[in-house]
Length: 115
Length: 121
Image 1 (cartoon, chains in turn cyan, purple):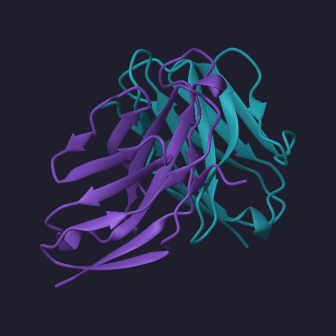
Image 2 (cartoon, chains in turn yellow, orange):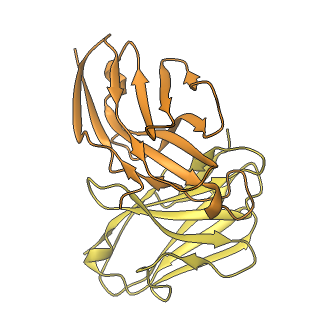
Image 3 (tube, one colour):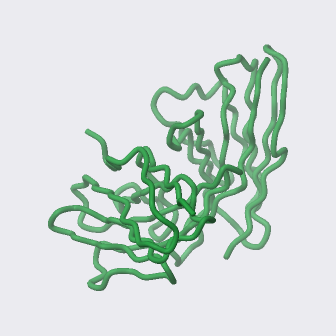
């Protein structure tokens, strides 16, 4: 199956700073990537759909100016949490889909803690 | 209304026995896909099994099988011969064709709240 990496795997930052999370598709080109957020003991919730070469599509209630998504190439999407607050502490997971198949492949996730 | 409902927050099973994790879904699409993922404490999402809405046979992958009852809109996961390593969170998910940009796997998944499975030795 496809390999998806995320970097960093975990990060601790101070309130008010910005954090960038990278999602890389290592062995195929992904025109679409998805960003999910998972709070402790909860399910995954879609934040936004990242489209290569165009603006991301955000889900209702997700602030696009706070969660900046850049999908500049077919193998890389980045999520930047701007002016982070403790309530942004969560597990952020990206996923990619392959053309012609049904499976979605998930990255290992990034655990963000804002102090 | 919830799109994916998993009514069992937690389940216990004895090692080597079979266990069924429940999942019901709600969609008006005729074409959709149903997924089960395993999430161990490390957080990674591990794909287990997929069932397409037009698939007539229940999907099977090794010890995992999906009991697909379309009329009841249920897609229960059956794990046979449970192992200690099966202890994890299990999520049922759905992708609706109407939400897909390009068809295939390009649409996002909607997840249930998950079931925590604990396998007892």
